[in-house]
Image (cartoon, rainbow, N blue to C red; front, side, top):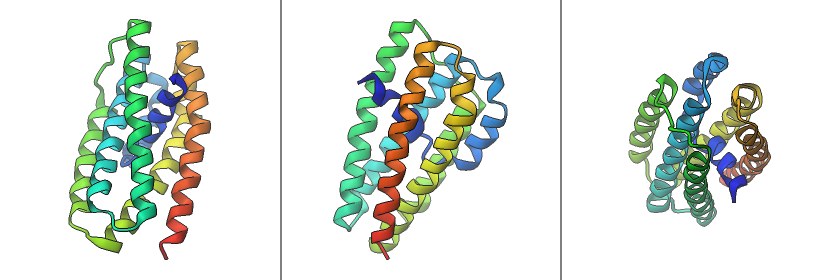
Amino acid sequence: MLVRWSAAIAATILLSSPVLMQGARAADKLTDPQIAHIAYTAGVIDINAAKQAQKKAKNKDVKAFADDMLRDHEAVNKQALALVKKLNVTPEDNDTSKALAKQASDKLAELDKLDGAAFDKAYVANEVAYHKTVNGALETQLIPSAGNAELKSLLQTGLKIFQGHQQHAEHVASELK
């Protein structure tokens, strides 16, 4: 179950490509409480995106993908909260988590204007791009910046899981032509 938390960190940066990379360049300055807040924020973002897709998607594979993302990320956020409590860490809001929330809100509004196949394609394309960004940020910034060994281990395991999410999103995208 704790493994899913690391996937959430990756998955939750869904709508954040430029913001995450901007924050990632400064990730050596991120603390574990800041990384925890970024991860939780990213999880909430992906949950909201999946809920939107559940309502708007028309393609059965896109709906199934959204169901998977919602299930995984809700479970991950529960695990993230349990880990934060166990480690006695208070997540700390920061510029990256604030920017992620703002960008996600903008992206959800953009996607909300779309319907049918146009929504399906845009949602899945965003998921593919997001997973690529998250995987890169985990590998190069968040994992190296994590100070706590348990957090670092979870992030490493999450990276593997999130690479699977990326492959799933790419497969769904390839079927939407």
